[in-house]
Image (cartoon, rainbow, N blue to C red):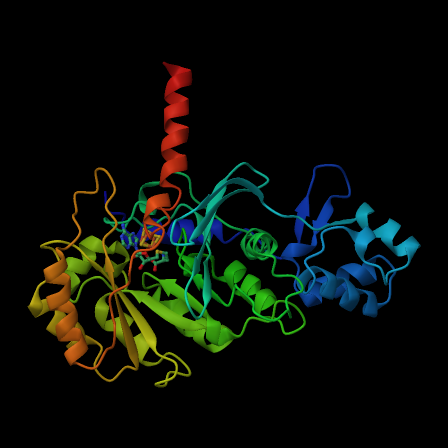
Length: 390
Ligand code: SAH
Ligand code: SF4
């Protein structure tokens, strides 16, 4: 079932034909332009194309990204004729929330439906000192890492810019985060660790992140944004140089033989090239380290020897290690490592100088953890389809 690296290539190219620039909605002509997919330059151009002066774009930008407005009528400094003109050409959308689940530990999972009926999930994970939103970059994933449920989903497409920013906007709405400058913000961090491979949708992810990081809007610092990749080596450098966000690598194995199976993109970009790209990631320092994600699979990658190999592999790179207890799903063929095995592995990692490396699974009661996203709705849909076809 492992894909060849060529397959990944085909989908990368095909899917990236989605422009992700100015989003349009509706089939009537002219279609409405969705401003949640526009960056500041797009908005400026759109506003000027309507015969309005450039400062109007700045006003609208702040209403959307600082105050979370979706109706032009509420933009009080625009003047009535402008407020009447804008909705004829422009729209400010949100994905539709099809389910909202809250875990006993405070984790919230939203299942979101987009205009074409496809769905993706965003998960909010509160902690003592931060609140992290886990954002999806694709519907499904073209890669089929053997332990990951997302990789088993048939439907795959890139999310547009508006669909990526829309996840953040929904979370801001739901958490009462407007205006974005208010004290005691609950959404402080973003991780591109939801469904999909963000570096296979680089243009849209990059544009969405730039919008979210804009100081004139939500203003999330790049230090508070982390992008997780399975190892799309050519885009790693770009990500660091152009976006400057934190980098997380789904490593999961310390030799090519095993990584070829667990993370099949390794056949195209083997460990040597991946580690080299990470070593050269721009701006690395002790304050800005690469996070190495390592899923703990019983009897597969969890020996003491592998813990030592892991420490050796990343030697010299400013690093954090994140041991993720495997989240089992039916038919995966894997099991979560035993607690004492994880402890023993962690002890070796800690002895080498990496602090508190085990990630506590969050939101398990609502299946909000890594690799489980969209599982239940997929099952639901399958059972619905079965009910219809039976
Ligand atoms: N595609 C990107 C980002 C999304 S996956 C990537 O692979 O990095 C986010 C993280 O969850 C990755 O580290 C992934 O390996 C991990 N993950 C996936 N399925 C998992 C599972 N069943 N149990 C634990 N971690 C899992
Ligand atoms: Fe895709 Fe990441 Fe899952 Fe691999 S781990 S199948 S890259 S979402």
